[in-house]
Image (tube, rainbow, N blue to C red; front, side, top):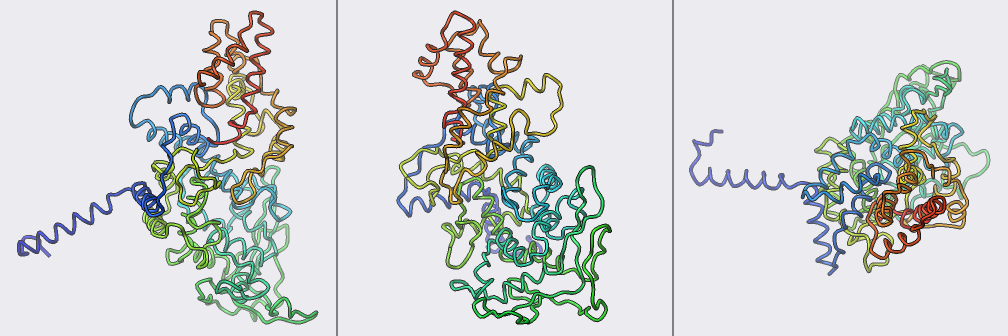
Length: 545
């Protein structure tokens, strides 16, 4: 159709329509988020807290994006920067930082495995963690990352992704629950023993999902370095047997076979290979398993990430949102059901459509979240909820074990000292015994956002290994603070910037300066060390502000 051949009125109407479309699609996701959140504040008559100050936002961004605090010099440079776009530039820089991929891998490894995963081989998952780091570093599309995990091609050591299914080796029911909950936000566990009392899921729905995994088992075949190469083998035959309600089960009762069925109630169409592979044996260790003629596993993987799947993209966006705002728009994030409606349904729909349109670009989505006014709010307000459902203030969260260890190293300058020494460390958890840090700080919340600190944390902070990081070598914080040319006030500012990423208040400056204002060098250094310890173990360090 040619525009010039149209009547003037029709031409103008078409132009207005096009302009309206362009304006609607020019609005960034961050603006849509803020607008939708503002609607709920107006409706609920809520006044949000003031925006976070520069120091609070700086620390939050470093921890959320890179899993560690800034150095004292980085904090000072940001706080002294008066440019209006410094926050946007910081977000770009942190998302491009190599630590971004490492931190995201830490976060999502806990989602996929947790601290105490099932399966004998699960703790040895360096290959899987490397797979996650590579995925985030390359900004792999989220759907492709998940597809690789569920197709489980290759081996656990060199390819990494198969380890996700290996943790549920020969436990198809557990795999069905985990995949549905983690990737689709659907809880099926109640339907394992009986039809779900509150949702539409039946036992046959549950076992229809389990049927996708019943033919799988892990196979060891060779080594890559010190790690076993574990493959996911898949048979051509084998069915899940359904015996009815658990309450009606009787010994020796043979159940009826249940064919694979997607949660959208569509059954999988597959060839019958029972005659061709009669009495088929499971793949055994020692030889790389051959792929089946028809893979149920691969069919499920493709369906899970399909754009036609009504659960996948929405569950992904909700989980990413929870990571940066403290709670999902559907909360808990793994219970997306008719009985548990989202607090902001229009926003969830808009974010889902935008994420799909951006081809599941994780870095883009995270960047949009961090640039919202909602994310950049302060964390102190009158609302007592640990995770406010209307997002009128930012979340305050305890640091993970990994974040604490790396932040302690940065704060004390131990990281810089190590770099200067030229010594190579065996792994990233150097300086302290990570197993101790993980045991004392590895489960800081009760699963719903409430902080659960305990005596063990207190004992570790006051009597544990932190003193190992208080090095007096060049590059360390202790050495920098002991410089005789520094005034006591300047020394205190350096200390606060290094440990808390902020400048001290006048009262804090006076108190710490007075305590460290000692003529005798040895005594002065001891007091500086005590001041460092006091800040390093204070509650402000434990949280993201």
